[in-house]
Image (cartoon, rainbow, N blue to C red; front, side, top):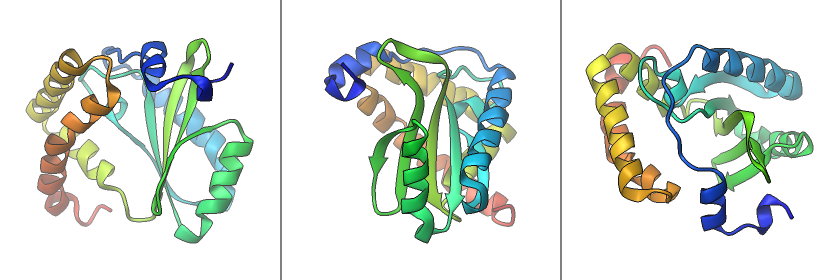
Length: 184
């Protein structure tokens, strides 16, 4: 049996949403995986960044490190093939994004779990979100509360949990763009 044989409900049960306190270990996990990805993808990476809640200090988070890799669009297929050949699990592919997971096993989570987001260079709204919440503690805590409320409301449905965060995330990105426009 492999993960592809499981229903969505079985996957949600095998990989439950859990929250832990922010920990500097997430930065170390990011740096180690970043080094690995840079070795695999060498000249294809335009920018690689730690994103997601593990990059936001002082909030509870799922213990999953999100990594954004910005690349030239023409390199998407090559990057996809390299990651698939190196045991990353492709979760989603659209015309301008590819998402991979690492650390999901038939027995549950591995000790280090990653979500890898491949995007065209400049498609980096997650960086605005991360930086704005790191600069605005009260909003970061509001985001933490929203995530916990959504978890309690929708568990174990990850899709509804994620969808429920959309308006808040878009609001923060809209606030952040003018402030950080020269940064990215």
